[in-house]
Length: 303
Image (cartoon, rainbow, N blue to C red; front, side, top):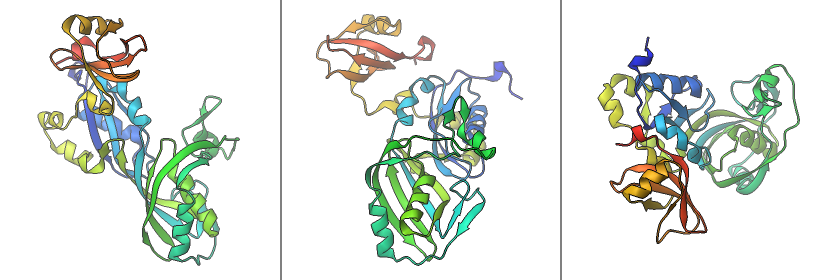
């Protein structure tokens, strides 16, 4: 059993290929123990049924995890046609069964209807909260509450394979998109019902599944080998412009003070580095031509 003295103030991002049948929090705790990390957090829950890319932030990287929570996601999903379930996926009880008599052109036409901006009602079996209680807790009590539809964006939706009663699709979508609900809605358009049979997350923001490592691989590594797989904290923020501050300004920025800087990009967020090219935080560029600290690294985390 690890003690507090065994733990390390290590920072970075590990791209995990989460296995099936464990929760995202269980995967997080396993990774945290393997790295002997003081602090860790993940960047968007995958259901136990789902596998695939789960970026996990260690140490100071947890301060910047929101960038991936807000990022677009990519999935491969298997949709079972002809049946519906209580949960919208394979973990639920079957609630209806119908004949399936659809052609590939009909399926492709149905998928086209979901591409672009649309509204989706979150499922009861979700971690969203109602009056402080997760919806899935209410769902297990066979209770249902009204949920407001939310705006989502589906950038692409492709049919990879089509069998008599199952579809394999790939989806690129905005945050907040429930693939279980998408599967049910596809079944509704086709008139035969459907549920999500399997799900694999292929990408989160700039990261892809090909960059990931499994729990089994991590367990087989030495601590040094695990550390070598860590991405730096600023890997979460590569989409932001970069600003380098001199030594005096860097010190002020790390103390939470606004600093002046010539030739700044347009107003917005930026990655901030010191004169030694060390990442020190995220700043907001003001219209007055100054850099306001938004999130800064602890001084002890600078290397």
